[in-house]
Length: 183
Image (cartoon, rainbow, N blue to C red):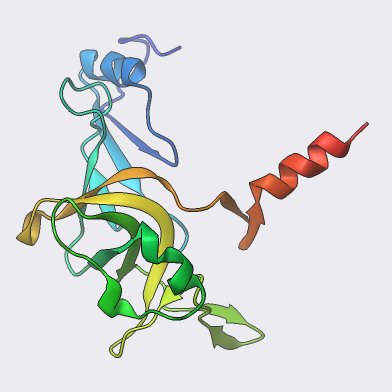
């Protein structure tokens, strides 16, 4: 366990993937360590940056601010099945503060397609189509915060139980079933 002073040269901690426990965040802060939380994946690298809200009274979740040039909105949760079937386009996105849904984004740090056999592939479960370029569907459920240049998101959960292993999606329910079947 980290104890303030153990590493006197430590000035900044970057965290991503899972929320930092509030008690750990508080220990880092008490030692003067800055916490930077990232909301990232292979498909959207360094697009949202947070100040480490874990452990701050009144901030149960980090607010991740969008980088310059990022275009994002949320697909309302009730529209996810229609989007999976390819029945929706980017016109279904909400961009207003307080809107909750599946994060869809595009911009300089967001991939535009998967490559398969040398060709770009954009299936509707991964991309929401728009006339001026696709939005990547992150499968992260977020709440939009702020407005204008201060727009950001709060992470609320996932819309699926998929993880990525070696650029392939793996359904955790399938892994669980296989593990339960072991002698």
